[in-house]
Image (cartoon, rainbow, N blue to C red; front, side, top):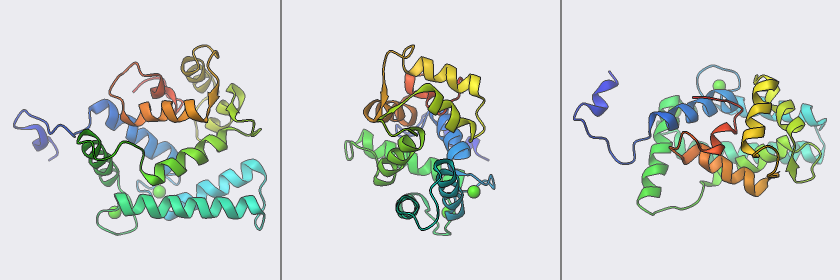
Length: 203
Ligand SMILES: [Ca+2]
Ligand SMILES: [Ca+2]
């Protein structure tokens, strides 16, 4: 099972490299499958929303709380439409990887040149989750603090931050964050700075 994909010795051009698969599965396990049951469902989004609201002190009924709920529902619906190929309201690791292969295929054929809708919204949320002081720039303390709540040791995320920001000479604003995230999701280069955005030093 599984090994038949490459038995003819040639790969479809849109197949993802091992590095990309590892990065995408790390993303799946760390940031999407919050309750660690092996699939992404609406309840993972509920959990992450609760966590974000708690982290920021947004109470149920407040404007921020409602906006976050709206945002997460939108991300989930849009992600589900693209990834949940058997329509069972669960996104498995296989479905997740298949979705990225399809994105890769569409990109390599020049059909799309930007992130899918859900990912644009998701990155906006993710950036704002880090940017706790809302000054448009994520600093090293913010980066480490938030990643710690996702189980990443502080020393490790600090090292990643220093690498990505080239020894803190490049401000981590939203533009740069999106550039790094793009490298994380799409680059096959083992030395790409974006590879460090999830706080992991090696794949
Ligand atoms: Ca889950
Ligand atoms: Ca499914």
